[in-house]
Image (tube, rainbow, N blue to C red):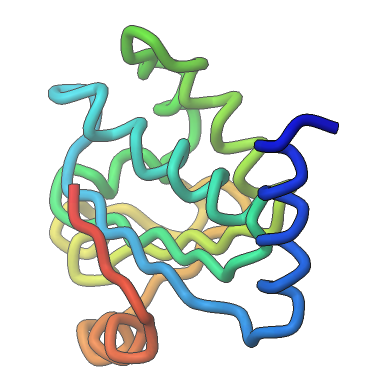
Length: 138
């Protein structure tokens, strides 16, 4: 094991003795800015691999990322396709939420959303962010 590997193992051991931190990532972009649509899922998956809790919340045009068939259209340079990142994110235990007023404004119903997505109100969004140690916005 390398020195870096030993340090990472030690850090993981130290984190296991601590409570999980919560990271909330808010994304407001879709295919119009593909890297900003993709980075939240790459970072979210990385945080999940560090055994942290992660919630990604989609607002504004970012909402479209949670609709059926949309992720297939997003593939930012230097990243895996968004569809793959979504699969990894969900398999790792990530939570995905969408703004319910955004859905209503676009006449999108629950049947139009991919699996494992929860629609939340503004109050629930505020509660999620207040309960997080860190909030990132893209």
